[in-house]
Length: 166
Image 1 (cartoon, rainbow, N blue to C red):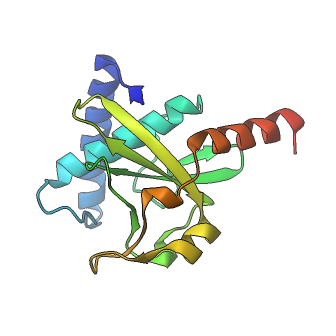
Image 2 (image 1 turned 30 degrees about the vertical axis):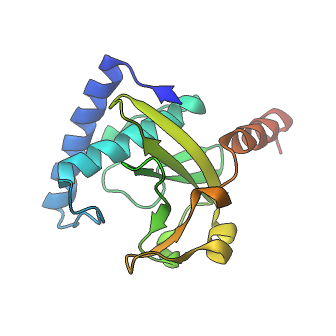
């Protein structure tokens, strides 16, 4: 579980609004699958998830320079990460297709009943996602949480690579 400060929440809301404006101005349509939420709700949630993962890995997070999402949310050295965040505590890791999973790994973050607190459920490498994913409600490809590896495993792997300069 990771809790965001009031300052972090404010900055995330500002970044999400900027991304929304850039994306819509460029003609990029939001790919939200949850029709109960607004585009703004989805953008803010996504940024919160990305921020939470950056915080765990002590990565710089400046999404204002990122522009439109290209499938790579974060980089841990040379390892690309796509963060997926869901409003549902039991939610799945969902991509619109196998091909849309571009990063080396994807991390699933879920919201909790507190808007500033998030659960980092786990991660999965791209090749494992390709093997284990199934069509989900006709809305893309997904894996359920039980197929994800603990986030500690990714943290350990990246730290070992960093310290050993491999």
